[in-house]
Length: 308
Image (cartoon, rainbow, N blue to C red; front, top):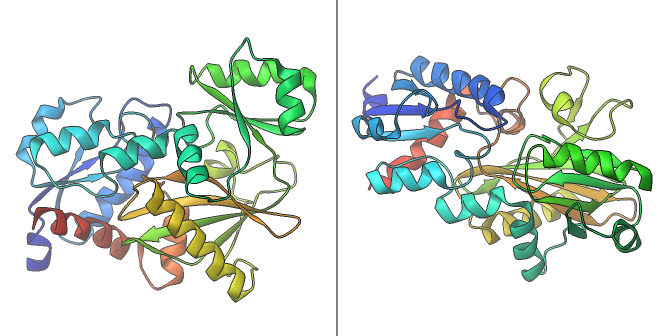
C-alpha cells in the first residue's frame, strides 16, 4: 500500500453538468473503484454537487468529467489556479480538443488529413453546402462529445431536422463530408499510441453513435484491427502527430476513418475519453497487458511528473 501513498489524497472528478453527465458518472465510478482497489486514498468529487473551491483539500485530481466544463479547459484552469496536479491534457489543449472546428483548423494548418466541413447556421445556403461537401454529410454540434446531437443526412430535405437536433445541444453546428469506409480509434497512454481498434457497429446503425457507444452490446471491436502492420504503424504515427498538434498530452483518443481508396482521415480528438465497460481506451490498453486497475494507476502516475 505504501506505493499508493505517494499520491496522497486524490479527487476523482466526475458527473458535472454537461450532456455527457450520465456517461461521466459511469466512467468516474469505475475509476474510483479501481483506485480504491489499488490502495489509493481516492474520493468522488462531483462539481455539480460541490464547490470547486473544496478541491484545495486534495493533493491531485483524476479528471473523468466528459464534455463541457470538464473536457474543455475549464476544470483544468481551476486546478492550475489551485496548483493541484491533474491527469491528462492542459487548459489550451483541452479547449482546442473540445472544439471540433478549431481542431480541424489546426490539423489543416499542420497538413494533416481531416474531412472537409462547413460551419452552418439556420441562415446557411444549404445548396452551397451540398455543392461543397456532397451527400451524405454528418451534422455535428461543434462542442459536444459522445456523438451527442449527431445525425447522418442523406437527402437535402433532411437537413433542417438534423440542424434542429444539433442546435438543441450547441449554438455552433457543422456539416462534415461523409466518409464511407472503415472506422478506427487510436488511444494514447503516456503520450504513446496503443494498438488500433476497428469499430464495427451493427448494420442497422448509421455510424458509431451514442447508442452504439453506450447501450449496444453488438458493436464489434477489432483488435487486431485488420490493417497491415505498415498501415497500422502509419495510422498510429499520423494520429500521434494529430494528438500533439492540438496540445493533447498524457492520455486520450483520436477517431479516424479509412476511405475506400485506403486514405486515412482524422475525425476528432477526445482528451477525457470514456472509462466504462464499453470504453475503448481500456480495451486498447488491455491488448498490451494493462488491467483496468493498472491503466487507472498509469494515468494517475502522470500527475507525479506535474508536481515534481
